[in-house]
Length: 499
Image (tube, rainbow, N blue to C red; front, side, top):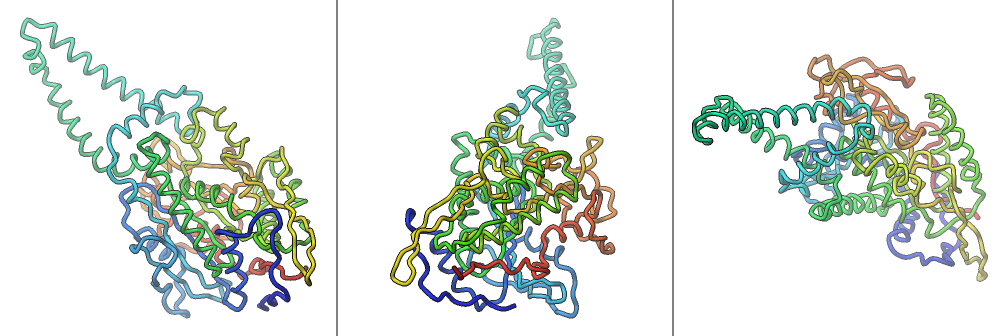
């Protein structure tokens, strides 16, 4: 592939905003990358639980990289200069021309250590808050669990009230009467079992979600650390100038964290520090694409057309100097499916936050202009020129990020993934929802345990490239990552140095 020519003149200077800080540094480094090989980066964000560093990443890379005896080892293990933690390593897959895959670096964003020291009170407060919601505000997929929780709570409370009444109704002393109720011993055994389960499961898993999704004062510090370190990792990947594109993959709660990282980092990296003004035809036409996407049913064909439009718009952004490099967001078993319950007070509050761009949608809201014009003063041959560049607004990261969401359909209380679900009707019709099936034939993998089986190795034959529901999860995940970035014209997005 022919490299872009170096600039014939110094980079233009911004007129109304100072080209300093992270954005300017990212763009300056990117301009020095013309002679290097094309690279891409994949950032994997793990889900809830007491994870160990690198365990998730190793399993993920082993699964998504198909065996290729002709090219030797799947990946190399290299020092990670992008993460702030010395526990992390970079797993680098060599380029594969036959597979159209450029050199690919895999990183893990590890955040579990910020959730240590969880307390039962934090979990109980979160659960009680969910149970206090009106049934109509509960997403349909969660209503069976919601009513089951209330049934168990009322049954347990009824047993205790019954026992206390029975103990006080006899002629013996009240305390003696309590001891005479033999079922209390069974209750004590159940309480012991609940304590064991709580310490190993509730505090190890549920507490992560409870603390991250609850902006109470004792959770703010952990939430901020998780987001800031994730933003720092993506910022470092952009600033390195190494990568033509970046893919963010979020599993379980990691999908929520990835969403938060993207929506916050986009605010800083949506503007060019050193612009290259040109006609922005894709941006001007994207509003019509978004409107078409929101009208009628979101068919696979419409979503495919829309995602192609998103990618062309990303290419155009890069060519005018926008330093943004995240092209794809892939979510697996994402609790974002229940966002109106977990991320807002009620459905009205959730709708309001989306309309106000606090929660960006895909596509962005068609009610407002997608962009505004920023004036730049460019220096050329000793003189200065005034040029306008169209800048996407702060709520439009998914104007140029393709969002693919994989989930195991939940049914009959114990089958499928209760935590994940479709996002198309939650965050916009431009999301490619893909219902998948576990890639293994094990019975338990089709139960609620499917939540941790999205990249379990299948050993099955390759799939037809057409997208549809019920496909094996691993093969579908490989397609969603689009690691064959060299295919077609997708690898040619670089800042245009012509005027």
